[in-house]
Structures are given as structure tokens and as C-alpha cells.
Image 1: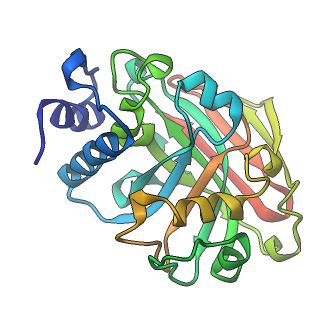
Image 2: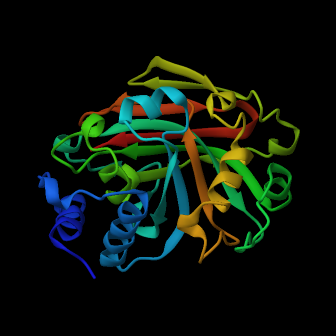
Length: 256
């Protein structure tokens, strides 16, 4: 069952605009926020093909005013090709995150025993580069929306998956470096160790153990966006971005 806010969040993501939320309409806890997220997701009538994590370091947790990393589904309609100019709504404050994408070769089904990094490593198909564009459809903005960020699709706008290299099994994923360019100039550098778990597999294990995926589990073919390792870079119309992940590959995108 949807309500005014969940329908408004869906419409804002689809058509633009911002959603003003009354005090009585805010989720009272994480469970309520994720229930709203499920309602918004259902309105898209699109396949879940992966998941994302957000607020994956202490700095971002403090900035957004949330207690722990949050998660959200990634829908097929929100994956975009590198050569496609991505349309964005400026009022959503679109920003670029540079992330390690983990694709699964095997299911990680629901179970009582918590998943470990090693369990994840044994289920991985490949690790590659990706951009996530994030945006906030709430009128309160990123820093004042709190739990509403969870309801708002975990602030996902789009995912652009890059060309994966073949060397992920030999890479040191506890400290794998990346470099990001915006409009042809270096804008950020980063490392996989910026994730609070110290590596992308720890992020996937956190997701696999999360109550939000307790019924579905993670499935073969799912693509997991593990959290930004290249900061949060504001985007505007006409911007271009590229990131070099060394042996793990590269990714590029442009904004319409």
C-alpha cells in the first residue's frame, strides 16, 4: 500500500520536482523507512538487478545524519550505458560517486549464519568500475532528510557500469587505487580502503546480512554498488566524467 509521500517520491524521481514532507509523514524508524522504500520500488514495476550501499564511511554517516550504512535496490531501468548522455534534474542536487561494483556468480540466499567476506569472495563473478549518480527528491535536502533518504530509493538516480578488467583476482582489494576526472581535470583520487569494512567484499557481506534483503537474498547476476571511494562530486548539464581503476578497468559518463 502506498501513501502520498511514496507516490510523490516516485513521481519526483520520474518527472522531477521536490517532495515536501510534513512532520507526521516522516518514517519513525529504519523499518518504516525501508517499508516506504519497498512501496516506491513497487511503483516502478521494474526488475531488481542489484543493490547499493550508501553512507559507507564515518564522514558520510555524520553528514547525512544516519546511524549506519543504508541499502536500496537497483532497478534495470536505472542502469545506463557509458555512451548515453544521462538526463538529470538539477533540483535533486545530482552528484557523482565512484564505486567498486561487485557482480555475483552465485546466490547468497537468506540464512541464519551471517555471511563473511570469504563467503562473498567465493560467490563473485567479477569486480569492476562504476559510477553512481545520486540525488535527493526530498525538499529538505541531503543533510536534513535523515531516514527519508532510505525511503527515497537510497538516493539512487542512475548507475553507469564501466568496462571491467580481468585482474580482480590478483588485485589488492584492501587498498586498490582509483582516479577520477571531471571535465578532463583530476577531481578525486581514492581507494577501496575508504569503505568502512576495508574492502568491497565486506560491503557485500553487510548487505547480504541486512534485514532489507532478508526475504529475497542476493542472487546470481546481481550487481552490487559498494559505496563511494571517490568522494561526492556535484554534476551539472554538459559535464563529463571518467575514472581509471587500473587493472580493474575504467568507466566514463556524460550528463545531458
